[in-house]
Image (tube, rainbow over all chains, first blue to last red; front, side, top):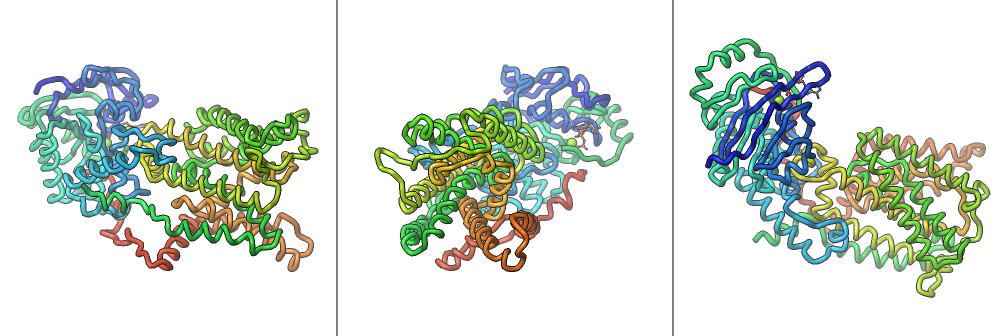
Length: 260
Length: 350
Ligand SMILES: Nc1ncnc2c1ncn2[C@@H]1O[C@H](COP(=O)(O)OP(=O)(O)OP(=O)(O)O)[C@@H](O)[C@H]1O
Ligand SMILES: [Mg+2]
């Protein structure tokens, strides 16, 4: 249970003069659900972007499953077993729902240009395999009936579920969710909480950013609090609930801002 | 498990294709020699635009330099067969190898760029290659052109009449389209489309986007090169002005006309473009006796803009729907579950 899956050491990102993330350390054990919280602009998305290789860190390191991932490309990090969803949705609007999720199976399959172009043996089998995996992922998030719809026509909440299905299609060990509840109605949020809990029972771990405190307190094993790029607290929901620095940070700023 | 449904995913019924092939086989016997030569030109262009449709339509990478690969193929074949007396297939292969090498060298730095810059970079690359064609006079004949390219022959069979050449080109085109279709309906095709959909998401779920962009760029260059080789054999005389940036833009126009969301789009675009072009050549002088080729440029420029605004998916989907109605196959994927209200609420958390 307590194998260290993800370890972040001194992670720092400076955009010119702005230090968006500064010397952040934390870890996540296998099977854990860890929340990263903080006011808008605190650096949460930037932290996720560094862990998933979207942005190279200015300094610091990321270890996953005993291997260093710092400086690796996003696709290599996905291959290593970390996938993610996005705060501002990044659904493939030019594909059907099922194709979105089948693309998520990409790194578990092998078909290349020549094999595909000549439709050599094995291609059909892989298509079936990708389809079956994708279907079961869609079933788990409850939108299998929409499989053949173009992804762009899905309502917002379903697009969020689609991103989660896509991120879980390669059976990663860890999924990073950036504000998964944003824009969902209470019923959809509860549904999503159930999905996350169920996936955790299957052995998946989650690191997620969320502003909805009820959800955060409800499902997190531990919480990491970031303010102005620095980690200001870490602990169980009960500990964080009473932490004075956290309360101060949250009463201080309440603006809304947007980033990736 | 879901056997029937995985087959629903892509339209892989070949009834329509069979019909099309029958028509293709009959048509040349009922048209005059001028129209046959037009059809050959359509086939050659369509080979180029099929490759480009994969690159631009599916992977979303704009190239304004493919006339250069068309030219590389043409000059490779001209030099190998004309100057060195080698068999036609050697010229084709040399063209393909050269194009692959050039595409890799050009692709590695440029495919990192965002769309607009990529378009500019490939445009610049096309101009450089054009300059090589022009200045390497010893090999290419420079602006005077390269004369006397022999007709194409394969295993002792010479494609020395327009009719034979027509079949060569269209068989090759169908093979090219089927290959592309197979690529698109697979893991590789989804990877390419995912780059177009969201390169950051594609990368984050395990698609090596640089590698896929490079490979599809190379593949499209190969299509262009092969078409260029055969074009040289067909016209027997080439000069650098056949491979200018304008020609690259014409290829782009064909791809846009045909549409990006269908592998047949490239061919449809080539047909429409060439036919319109021939029509204009006949009609324009009747009304405007004093204008020349400029009119065509203006016309296709306006058409390009109009299609981008009113029919961003091009003609192929519309024709596809018509075809579906014709054969009575209902187009699925019509149902709309809800309004695409995503942008109304994006982010704005809490
Ligand atoms: N690419 C960038 N270039 C320059 N500054 C950036 C960039 N990305 C983020 N920032 C800045 O870094 C800081 C942290 O942004 P980030 O998006 O990580 O915050 P966040 O905690 O995710 O906020 P939110 O809750 O609004 O999503 C902000 O001040 C933001 O303006
Ligand atoms: Mg954020």
